[in-house]
Picture 1 (tube, rainbow, N blue to C red):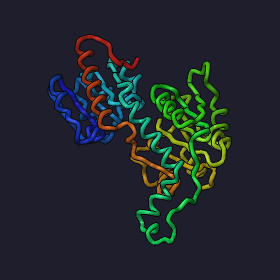
Picture 2: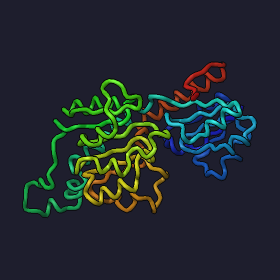
Picture 3: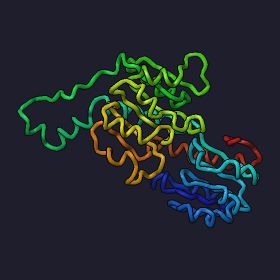
Picture 4: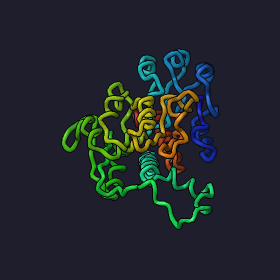
Length: 313
């Protein structure tokens, strides 16, 4: 059995992949360029990937491929239709990063709501020490209690964020893909929320969900954090809304192109004090990465035993 890990570097150097050797010959690559994927998986029985893409052409050339393990919940980097055509099973990992993503989401909201982008440099750059005042209280920041926190996507992560928001005394608005009791439509959420956090998967329906029209609906000064997928929102429109003052704060952990290139709409606003950009790390607390690998090991064992576990159907 040949196992190929395409992008081990995304898991960090503190996660040991040697446990995968229990299943056969292991080839580990720190990263894999698109042009190299087909050659690297040509003789693989099992491919393990986090963010590296598997296109239809890649799958077509891997004649012995039996299983693709995605080290993530989202699997939009794998051509599922091509895998089905070739009888290749695909497994993902669910629930491993709930606490990690919720933590970073709320940390981003707090950073923006407390204007830390202004207050922290005031101290670290020596301006506080050089000032004649014991404190600095401008720009004003506001308590979260009583604010409306809109959550787009109410799976395990959205629910965890919601519990934390309620602990701060926020009123919750929830937009579920499935609708139902307690769910509001996306337009209502955009109009009424003081804080909006995105936790929905990327699908044909959610791509571009937060567009220019919906941004215009939002309250002036709204804080928006995207911890879902970059293309869920119109990135150019978000950048413009920051520059115009429509958005009071923008937190982003996911991008339509990763890493974010220098011509990305967010690159030019990356240093603004009301912008909090992180490098797609919300999922990656140490404990979450350990759980992710452990779950992937269980997925492989189940597959080899003829069982179905975390299969993407």
